Image (tube, rainbow, N blue to C red; front, side):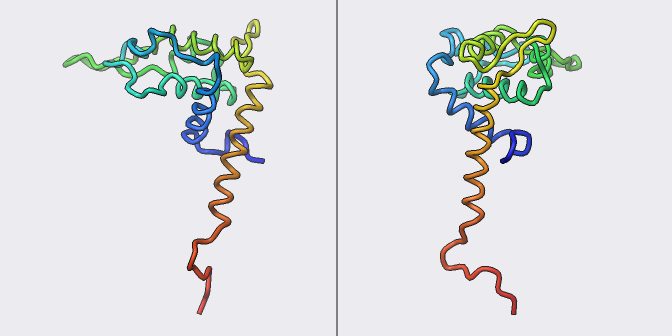
Length: 157
């Protein structure tokens, strides 16, 4: 069975965001469409599913065990602030957006808070991402295994 570590991050995040959209507790707050995701951004996210993409990305990072708290996630999702003629500086992402996503993931039972460690993924969240990884490998295996119509395969003369 393939792991989330072995599969392309973009495909895992896209599939997970589609699954998270179906969950009742993972709805963006009413202010999510008008706020920027950080001070380094000029505009709010333009994609309609931006909330779920960020949620899936955070869940994946917790799965990989890289980052555990809001402060570290703010640093990870931050960017360079354009300051005109002055040199650019790194700025952190919005803490409110990340905190609200983590709270929603906790309410769904995919993340829990451990004292001294920050937020960690639960077995439900781990199995959620493992199932997505399994589905994605099954899709790629089916695409590879089936030859195109009309092709004769590898014929060496």
